[in-house]
Amino acid sequence: MLAHRDALRDLSARYLLAKEEEAKRIAHQLHDEAGQITTSIHLALAEISRELPERNRERLRQVSTYVDEIEDRLRRLSHELRPTILDDLGLRPALEFLAEGFSARTGIPIRVEGKTDGRVDSLVETAIYRVVQEALTNIARHASAGGASIRLRHAHDRLRCTIRDDGVGFAANPLRRGVKGVSRGLGLLGVRERLDALGGWVQIRSTPGSGTELSVVVPLSGRP
Image (cartoon, rainbow, N blue to C red; front, side, top):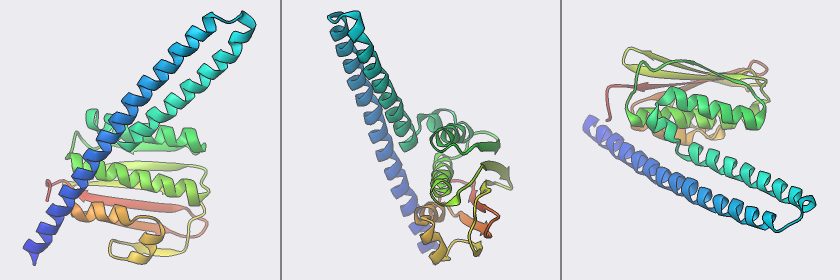
């Protein structure tokens, strides 16, 4: 039975790794091609601008500003799809970048606290990052929160990440993996899939009017 469970976890981990590699390929393609296209647009606008009288150039400068905004949004989308900062610098900087983008879009301030005590397995970093992404999506859609926090804690060969908000909350008992009804309603099936593959678990605490706390714990003993 244990061998069967370990085999399933190994298969799930390989599947998740393949998904992340595909996301990385798409993100890089989006980033590179979008950059090439917007650069071509800027060059074309500059060429047109030289042939126009000064009074008409202001409109082209406005168009160029819009192109800059599109390029910035596509770059952020590319980073969120598969952030190169996660691969290059690790989980804490990637979460700070994610929180910054979330706050810019929603106006909800996010604090990032704690640390991982160095780099950990890439599957663990990716799993935590995706969990935080899903949690922030739920906060934006449902919480009506004025603020939130993300806290990392490394202890006893495990990495814990806790996401709290001060929003409206909901009526629910403490939740662990396997309680399907609430997790499905929160869009956390993908979260459970990732954590199960790594031997981790998720817990949610919330009461109406008192916000929501989502905690995930992932062992750091290595890939299954």
